[in-house]
Length: 224
Image (cartoon, rainbow, N blue to C red):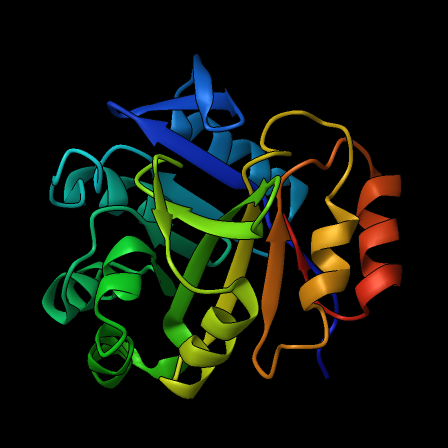
């Protein structure tokens, strides 16, 4: 039976753990391996790890760091950053990572979802949608650390990803990233009834009350 999941998200830049605010103003906060050790003790449900520069700088995933994270973690890991093909995804899963997250390449080539799903299993493919509210257009999808807007509506993209076989969807609010002022419930309410696969909302949580409000608003799902 499904139950709500709490999934901390670690942002990696140059091998270090950073904290950002609205996808900018990043500050180094430590060693990601030490963070994994802490979350092992907290017994969280899952850990999301994202290399925030890999896609923007067109870099390969840092396989050495991924292996170290996987070896240390006692919880499932979802890794994202720089994944462009099924061979990369398969290599990462073979290291002991349970899920791979894809974003900009998936939006450019939706058929990549099926390719990776065939290699590692559909349930292991997570589609990440970084979303920011536009004054006129409403909630829009962005890639490359929030610098490039993607055409098409958010709801249409959610349905398109699901039709292409995505295993899970993560909605990341750029506006709430690092702000610790609660989730974007306008965004949550806009899309919460669209999902036919597991989903997670990320951005804005500052307390257990925030997480509880999200779970009560949308029912079973993931909170990051």
